[in-house]
Length: 239
Image 1 (tube, rainbow, N blue to C red):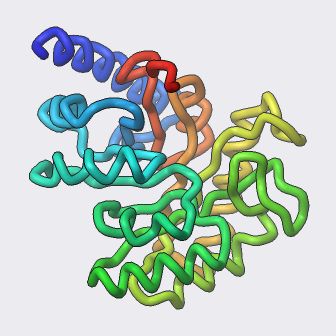
Image 2 (image 1 turned 90 degrees about the vertical axis):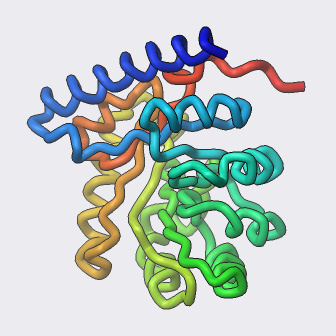
């Protein structure tokens, strides 16, 4: 365990250096960017070490892995984010432990999240996942709603009991006009965030950038970066 702690501490320090350097290069303050460590496929023991090392935000993408891990770590001062495509039949479980769902991309999910949040007596923050590879009125290859669908979903979220519209999230697209243009994709998300805040001023989160492209996300104006591999190492192959 001490070896794992040293490994995670070293990796975390390197990521911190990268974020700090990216902020300096962009003329931004370091505290303008929040690190979310994506702990999917890694054990609760790693989450506990990360918490001891000062990490406050962690993310998961599958309820069957996340629910028992969150329960095991319920004593820790963590903010839990759900970043995967969320099926409505998993919502009741997810609402029991997450603080923010970053992958809201359809009205039915909003309705189900609201119902379960009210049932649980919780307020859940929501980010609209934006698919920059989506056709008009469509969804992205990896989930998400096209830019033309943001306004309708935001208004629905704002009126939904138990939910809070906190901002936007994207994953750099593999196809379409932004394929291979991560910085441009993230800048587009920031522009869309500016539009969103005209109607919903508190929705100021912009979640973009991962291990390979966090610098581009910080340069574009992201407020949150989601980093897994660079902190935890290469994920084990599943199955």
